[in-house]
Length: 173
Length: 299
Picture (tube, rainbow over the protein chains, first blue to last red):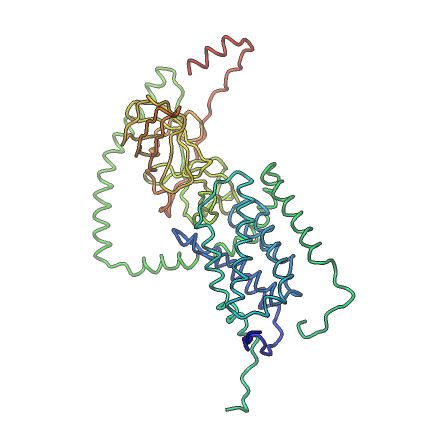
């Protein structure tokens, strides 16, 4: 068995609910920024990424209710069909909750491989709903956002764990 | 919670049950929205919650704009001022002519007992953001129900038609661009008056004339303006320019692609037209079939 990443097993402070809410609001805000041009395609769905992150890290705090409500907000903000993001995020939350023990056992590189598949699944659900409702296929570039999102996974993990790290011990040099 | 023992007995429904519940709820919402359109009320309620976030997200750009205005040099302001003065003089002359022509036109229409064209008022709006939903071509503008925007109103910029208001929220509204796959505009060729239907293709900067016979007189560079026969768009607004005509005898219709004239993807200020066309009632069709056929041929 390969050597595990030591950072996965460090002792962390419990996460604060306020911080989770803050990350959700921040993700919604970043998603709502006026992206334009090819950025629209490259831009990751930050809300999906953050929902997946918390469902994997804190499956007992974050689950279907928050994923579903955030999905509804995204639907309204995008002006898309009501419920398409809610459905996709619910499936994402399910995958995160079911797989959370497994994903966290892996190194960062292998976690990314898990995450990219789950985010692509999220895209496929939205695509399926829209094509069922009569929209055309927007081209393969539609999936680019998920690849960027998966690439951001290590950054997100580092940033979101910062408030949980205990203060450095003043007794040590 | 992380450091407390897991609750062994009370864990609620399993994730699979919860997933099924959420999915069923979402699918019910999807069907109600897509098929019946029942959920506009709920959409408005949620939009009120999301609205502060939407404004906050677009605030940095607005702030940058104001900062940029603050640091404009005096020389550029003076040149712009001179240019605008010259422009307004020029426009004033044109306006005088226009007033005279409008009066004359009204008089002539009176004489001919023709229907008067209704004056239109405009509402200035700024584009908040564009194209987040990758499946449609839409923009969100910062004027909504509270400012008197109504669904169905045409939206233009200084050059021509941009799109149509398709959904309103209390303080925002959604405009579907003419390049959207499901958006059509009735147009008229400025050169010879041929009427046609212009539809979007779903690609930026590309429109298509639909159901045009192979021998119809459309050429590259033809200007297309709204015909106004639909009662949605006022007549005479520039819409597009024919960019490519392909006549293949293997197909029933010619493939005519056009380029939108208005900056459909690049504008940040637009006008919402408040234009109500009070068309006379459509005459009641008589049940006799031969007459109905005749009137269809006339059209």
